[in-house]
Length: 271
Image (cartoon, rainbow, N blue to C red; front, side):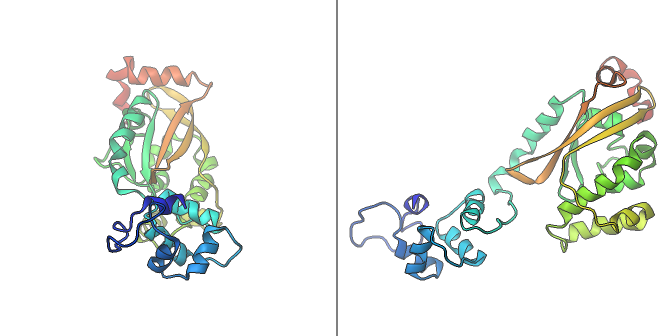
């Protein structure tokens, strides 16, 4: 009812004029006609009765009521259906500058941002120094690099332990849209280059994004122990922010600070 009251007849494409309205917005009967459903059925929907509801009908109602993506998904939950995947709102696509500030502020600790295909969108300077990101002039794909980049693998002392987790987390993302050409391209590239990936992928494990402990051997700073945390910004569901936090081992925090500050003259020797 509250969403119905926000939409004027003119906004819904109805002719202006007519009888005076006692309440603002659209009448139930008008929403029903515009959505292509029966007036009684729409009334029962609004009253929360136990009726059969399809995603197509909910999408039609959401269109008439001019619901945002978040409101549309909430409507699915109210109707007892699994909500559709979040969509990027067009006016939120300019958040990248804010996300750039976020990972730059995380210095001297590594941070990077990936898209849904694990293509690296941006990274801070610490990620370049610690992980060697961007050496070829382009950020690359994090899944492909995990299995094929000899420099990254030589520094990653926890590679064997983390490989299954990395693949299981990627499968969880891929499972939502297995026919997507972007996912198919990444799988084809890493599958052709890495027998180890093909073997682990065949195990069909699935795991939600979370935290991963990483042990690294940097050629200048020595042993580093960090915990990566993957986070999603609801307004940009197509991006994943990965922040690395130093753990209380191997004096990691001090080493990362040194690499970003006093060690600037030598920090890139191993990159």
